[in-house]
Length: 380
Image (tube, rainbow, N blue to C red; front, side, top):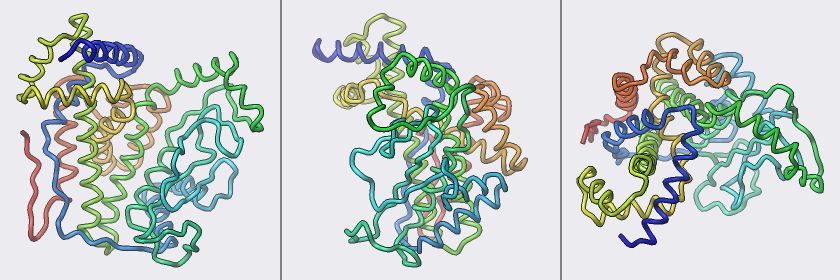
């Protein structure tokens, strides 16, 4: 590998080391979790999948009925979003994802949320086949996929674990006042908020994916929608978490080499090649992927952690009821990793990782069996 590529790799590794040093989750523990996750095989989706289009009315009704089956508090939160009766609980449903949209603290409406409380939550809905008109009337027409309701459940759940920062309020400002974001006062507020949500920064997707998993189970048990379609949704989430675990592991593995040796060199690439039991060419493809990602691993880390932890949270809920969900969410709000591990009875060692991994595999098994095909979760 040429010197320029190695230099880039070392710079990226330093960036990852710095970011991970600020994380409440020990990087070595996370690395071992990811290493375990990537021993699981990806699962083939059912080849007899049937796509069903539903009315928007049925989609929203299904979402509300699900949340009501969990708890009246979560049902009330969902109702606020879907009916949009409160100013701080709004939701917009689009046909297709709008290019360039990002969840910046300053929204297009001019409302500025210091604490990112989803005052303008936007949920994107895929268009129906061959539909190009974004302004069609959707009420009582079959325009939505089952996956759309999963997306809505997921996005609403993001509001559950957001913690208000003491002394920080939302402000409404006009577009010409957005320069406040460059002030010292603003930076101080942001620092306070970031410190108060370190745990949520890595577990926010775990919360949303937990409710998503409970919802797919609800769909399997409480509806007559095609099981193959619901299974495809669950399998897609499982596979995505493994993809993210693989990417995140590569980045953290490189960072570990840099941390231990001071500099990554060609000999280290050879050691990685042996560790992965891959060709030099394949290992260098991994390196190129790391360089393209440029140390930006937060999103992949969130979804990898969600893939590992959400099944255990769901399992505890099924055994002990909604109090588990509320205690978990309170732990996230309390900014406490230890509370999460204690609640789930997970130790921060190999035994704890094994428990999480077993629950991860067990949770997906009901979605992997079909009359004409049988998938199994196997270790490589």
